Length: 501
Image (cartoon, rainbow, N blue to C red; front, side, top):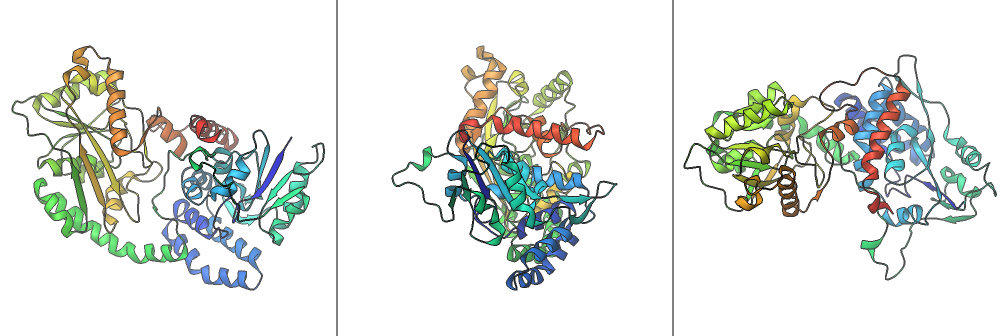
């Protein structure tokens, strides 16, 4: 069988330096102190590389980022956080050489611990095997910071993978010509960056990696040394700014928020024509895309009146800070339907039928419950932009979501009002609730330039947090847990095979 072996850093990824990925592990799996400590050691790590001691510098990064961290936390970061940053750094020309060629065996060689890259390269880059260092783990499940297999064994390990093949060597090797790529000597054919695509080739028809749909973690940008330093310097100011913003927004009338936002560094863009307040007690149901927990608050600010919002699994702290009324759902259909009907009888209501937030340009499947309860439906396309910190989390402490949102220097929200659904497009005209929900999802996705999916809240939490978003996963062996997570991961990626083949 045809086979290809490729280096990850500097070949499949543009950046040959894995420092930023260890910074992500330090921040997301441990916290700010470890993040700062690793950044402080960066000059020493660079000096080691300059004097030809790059392997020692890499060992320092591994130790500082992982020592004393639970392996389950490192696995979670590798599954939920790192793939997005890897995908943004993929060298597409190298990927097309690696991922093309039909049925072939694909092996990735990495300087990073295997656990940090396996989910990504197998799920998104179609790799079959990963050759990387293995973290040493103590009897309590914590990483020691040391590795069990050295980097000098890469040549032997790649050779061992192909021992059973007819010719005993890979057909093609991709990598830079340096000692770290010694596996290239095993390959029949060798290619080094830069890789060039054929002239006249349609880039839109070229093979693409599987997209990242679910993504967790707080950091928006890759924490390169300069970006990480900027983040550390900003955090004290950001906390102060967040406190001021939250205090003012929760104290002043909701109709003044749009006037105050530019003064405090925020911005709200409004498109479309907001509907007027209802003339009767029966209200309008605003069906919104769900980007952050600020969606209904921003909607109320734009409308100049407090619109109650339907919520689920929002922290009590966030509800306490909320300047608008919240209606907590139970996920018991009949009870929730009665709650929503009761609120609509008293006035307008906002609902996010995705059931959870999604950061990427995709819309999750809409629950059809809202379509059964009213024919006065106004779709609202919500989107946002932030500079430093994401305002949502699946694994972290949800009470911090509003604080992280307001810690951003210039958060921007975009609100687009679509026309109220005509009666013939609602259940009143005989449409099924599912048809109505799918139609609303489709027009909102088209407005935002997003893609509709069939994924649900449970799919998101299984990938990002290892549970279904309602109850904690029962204790199981580490091997069984990893198998279940890989199964859920493959389910999501498998839906996007048209992107891959």
